[in-house]
Length: 529
Image 1 (cartoon, helix red, strand yellow):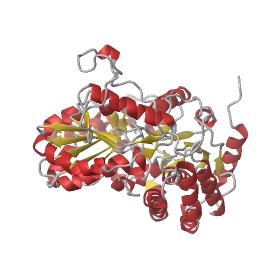
Image 2: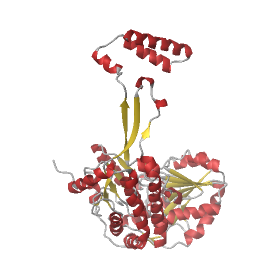
Image 3: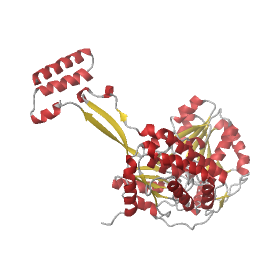
């Protein structure tokens, strides 16, 4: 039997984690506070590293990485002590037959948490998960993305400078090969942010080993524009949701469902934004290739690209004539994935050449006249592309959106908050935003996670912090009366009267049953004495 990978790293991390977990929470939060201050002090180093890794402009990194990370750390400083403290179970909830018991629920750390990181928001989506894990008392085995090695080096240095114990955070090589090895290591929980294709393979392997996990996977997010929506606001939000980080966002807007009476107005509001867009470069070649395939498929099925006067040549044989066998199937796994860690749908796949702008130039693309069976509406993409789909009623919109297997986030645009909340209740997504997109999902006090093919578990907020722990109930029983023990030693027929009387007196229907049960209970106790 071969030894698991990273034996020395896990051993060092576990040795640091055990005394760390015994510290009061307030002491574990001191380096969290220092980390937040260091994030400000070394902001320029982080901005330069992110720009060198994935060519993101400083203003965008400040808005989408540094500010949300600092807010999340401050949330931990304020709330972790309260959230992680032991919880006494109220005596009023204790069943009668457990009299004498006092119960407390503790939040215990998992131990060593493996974090497989992502590159598209390399500060926020790594630091928050690591900080939550260590604040909860865990050690962390961190595998940064191969696309953000420079940012990972600065991040690891910040954790060291914040005076976390040595080896509490062990940084693994930022290589693609190291990712699947985390699933084989002797860790106690795994947090993965990446594509659904990789997530499925990871989940299968962890399931074989009975290792719990948190999987934040791909998305194909829907926007619903209702009849009374502010069309200009909705169009700007859609464009922002499509183009932020050049479309390399798991909660990017991919499907826009617009009530038919406002469809033309929405398209016209979106047109100048789309026609004035400049080509952008993507991080991996596979993302640009997938985008081209999605656009080709959509055009072959009758959609048209906004801004093009005539449809481009259709390379799909017999497209539009029902010959579906010759077209890419809508549920074909995406070669680009969605979560950002691995563009190829495999745990171990060839590492693409490193460099800036690996994907080449692509133009942000809006597909008009789209239909839900098109691949762009069924797959998770990681490029600036989205489909605009008309609908007649809200019921129709819900039905049209339901064909997509992903459920990460969604948005609703309407002047009626009640209607928006009613629609949100029918949308199987982890986060629904009303009259905005993307930005509110970074609220540090709200959970973030998906449903369906978008994974399970949550990061961020109180729920994300508690997910880095496992509950343990501790019961202390006073006195010496233990009738269940006596029954095991010397069975007594009176016990049945006591138990049946207790059942009737505490759970029966109506006062006659209660009273009869109480009498039976007393009779059994007298016989036992």
